[in-house]
Image 1 (cartoon, rainbow, N blue to C red):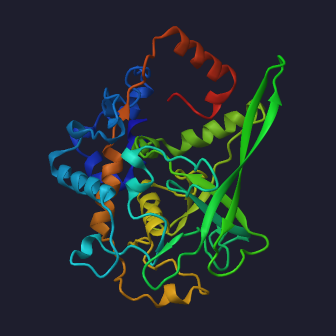
Image 2: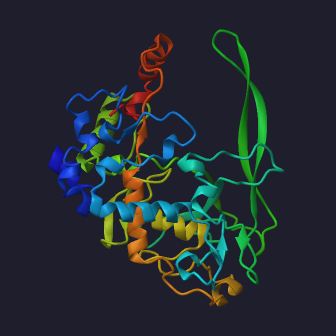
Image 3: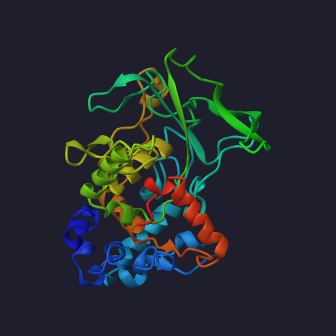
Length: 358
């Protein structure tokens, strides 16, 4: 188990080969680690305050890697600027983008939230776009004019693509015991589209920014374990079963198991980070070296103030290392009777079939 998990954290291979991480916390879970008190093993923090999601497992990071992790933390917290800039290391925002920093959506490394009304902008949420069919690598086909993601903002001289907003519809639901509850359902709509209406067959998928702590532990899970869970769910026949997603790994040039993103559309953390930089902020990297400018957006394509790639390979690696080093908050009030009853109900309802405790 240990060697398998270590192999599956490829981008962190230098760090993992050191003795300091020979007891990777995920490995201890299979050996009976206390999931209630230390769900991340040595990567667990007792902090329950506002900064709990930002804690780094410095004691587990070898001295030779600490500067890189610290640099990655700075880049995640960085507000990027439009080129040209006196500091080219933080320049490259756009030509179109959603937000100027990672923390604009992942506040304190936590999750975002949807807007409460149609009048409120999507501050920590975005909308992915596609049309039916598959691209050259088996992924979704981008909307022909607006691409894979609606970017609301443009640099000077480049129009933003438009705005997405949520409309909430409420209805009354009657439960089995006769209790009536009010529920609401969101629908996505668009306005101020700069290049005309969307394709008639456009599919839209709103995405709330997820929390970013603990992701390195998820990458350490062996592929065989993920496939085994999917097979087990199929055998159980409870009506809910995961289907492993196969996605294109840019660095390897082949299709592999998807792990990250709301629909498991990225193979590893390095590509997840690079994809978010490109899609959300327009920051190019060694994995995604071309700006996101669909052919119809001529002003975007003509923008030539940037150099490409804008993010160096070392900077991308540092950001990835920072994600690996983030700690997992300890579970609160794990021994409280109502919490234990909730855990039982969670498992009995079948939630734990997907949301595994380990």
